[in-house]
Length: 496
View 1 (tube, one colour):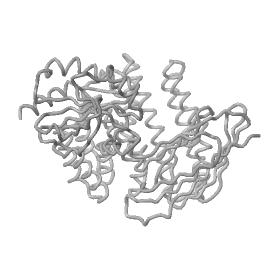
View 2 (view 1 turned 90 degrees about the vertical axis):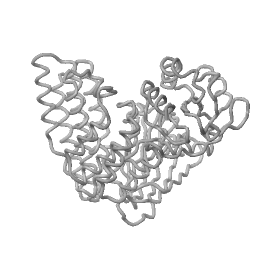
View 3 (view 1 turned 90 degrees about the horizontal axis):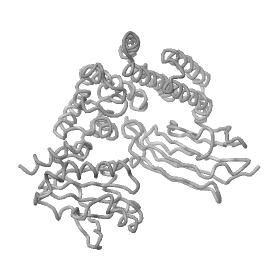
View 4 (view 1 turned 45 degrees about the horizontal axis):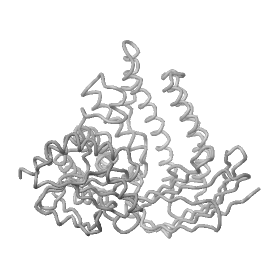
């Protein structure tokens, strides 16, 4: 058997959300063994703030070839508890750890043995190792859940039958967790249990919602009855102080509120109008429902979850109107009693709120000249940050050409700054013709150096990132993806 020398040692210095003492750190050593060269790479990622942000830039993502000397990773300034993920390119299942819970003082040794069939067996030892053992035991169940979802989508399994199978798998998962109860901290036990129960409920909601949207007649009424039953279910039991550590718990409650608004606005909604995007639902509607349905601490955590989730805001709502988003931020800050959550929301308002100051940025153009954003004070500017090979970036550029340019092409007080975020400036130059236009201000952002601080400031986890800046250099919006709304906001800003 060939032993590949991958040893990952992570050392975290912990900052907590609720004033607990600092931890000396987490130590995790991982060794990979395989009989053939099946795995050529391990992807490692962690979330510094796993519940309230899924921005990649809020964490860290790196890939490591499984060759050569041991690798040491040192990471600091992440919140506790944290989460890590390890992903192997050609193993079954791909995830060694998926969203794995880490606690202060964990010191775990993990050995992964990969067979000729690419399937793996995991052995763990050390302080905190029970959580990792549970993850390994749950991996086949997670695969079965994916199979059930696939069979339902292919109409090979009735939806009602899938609900019963999922309930059975949930009971089996919780039984595995209960068997390790004495080896787990109270926090780990409660959070993992809430993760499990919430994840199964969310899967059932998604399956039922899609089934309801595509059904007719009596069958549609049956699915609606099941959905309403799930919507009326009280939140999963979880101690108040542990709520911030279960993203699944908060996401499931959030999805329940989102479904209620989708259904209220259009009982005949299409399947994609709940799962992907919906122009008939505003962010403020969901925010107001959460505000009215819950008491603290669930309410304040849910409000923070909704407001800090940039990905959901951009993709499902196509952005929140800047006035509404700033109003919701201010309202949530007043409603929030927890000091740490209040600080997070205040920081978000100061960076993303209407009228917040846009940080300075100096970048080279295609001629090698340095251009600063501050050079355009006195003009309304739209900053379009794109990446190479990004189809969504091309779609947004097409919308800019189709919707924005015919109306604003001759506006002297309006400029579009097109920023290509890449490591190779040669490839950026070659991409300008498809990703931008000659009349735009074309700039290169080296995503491998300190220029990425600008992306981190706006938590760019996927491209494109659009920023609308007023004549005074203040932010109008960084969350809107809908170019028709961008056009309206540009016109409003020009008129001021």
